[in-house]
Image (cartoon, rainbow, N blue to C red):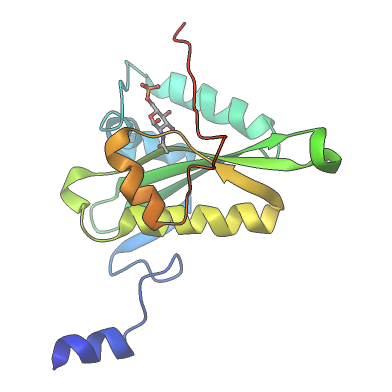
Length: 168
Ligand code: 16G
């Protein structure tokens, strides 16, 4: 049974081995030309972000040291960014000046769905958050994505499962 042999002997995908022609890496200032903004518009309103807007925001995020970890997956054959997720590290006074991770803006290009790439990028971010010393990671998501995040270990904590928003 070749299927079984494959699962047994081939390593599962990981950040180091995401699959042929795929690379997991931090966002780079070149990524505007690799379709980063178009990718984000598969998640929500991308807006009309010019190259300069992108570069300005990239630089201002970089100035916030140890805070924004925008992580992408590139299809290196096509030179396109096909997945992205961001870890935001919030500094706290509570819990002995703890760090809290927030998982934001998770998106995988429609045509690459079903390859476990969402799972890959989120597990990469979880490792990063752990390495950075975050005591927890939280996220907001649409109802239909609850089973997906649950499968990755995220929980609605009892008595603390309300994400609330005021749109400004
Ligand atoms: C989802 C995203 C959040 C993103 C928001 C945009 C995850 C885990 N959650 O909640 O990061 O910022 O959608 O939606 O990726 P909005 O444009 O309606 O605020």
